[in-house]
Length: 311
Image (cartoon, rainbow, N blue to C red; front, top):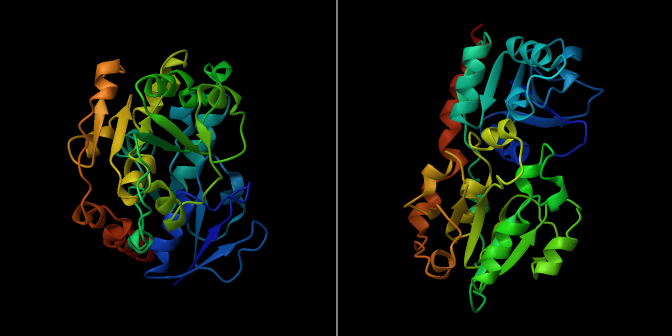
């Protein structure tokens, strides 16, 4: 069984693609394939995001559906029709979120589906922790946008006012960006902007030196349907800081926050100074880290492939 992961339009093979690729490799002959050559594979894995590459395939394909655009950005012109075509013609669909899966299964006629959270790979937990920095240090790994973008599809990532509250309460805030962005407002606040790190043990090792990591979303000025989408997601960050051995602090964290609240992190209901100054954070144990790895979902993947092979 040869499986080919089709590279997305932007060539990005990080995040969900990296984790799923490595999980597939544990049981199958897997390779990255260009968008022009699909030869030599039995099943293709294609990105969601309404990527039209699936129309060029003449073999069964699996959709890596970590973003449901009709939820994220609304139905739009032709968006529902394309999403329906992409998902209903798929031999299988892998979802990262229970709510994304429920939404699509109720809206479309899907053949085979499974849920695999974006937990870290067990092998990526193998690194030496860095020494802790003195004081209170909050780290955020991901995209962060300036305030004027609050009304855009990515407005939930406008964290200026949230990070400002942490800084006022005595925290030093660090950002490991996902890509080059305008961080001028964050720098004015006093946030420290670090070099981009790819998903995996290198990132986790960098994060290990901080006190805690931030997971959550901005609600202020964000279109209601876009903010609602964030509350249904299961992003990498639900487990990213756990992998680094530091607790997670959530705010407007969505239903995903229930996974770590009271376990490897805490979800805040407000950003009051007393709350931020007197946070009680859990101690992260090795048992916690080892229990939350994507490797534990290999049987789910095997079951999906078996169903596809049996059709």
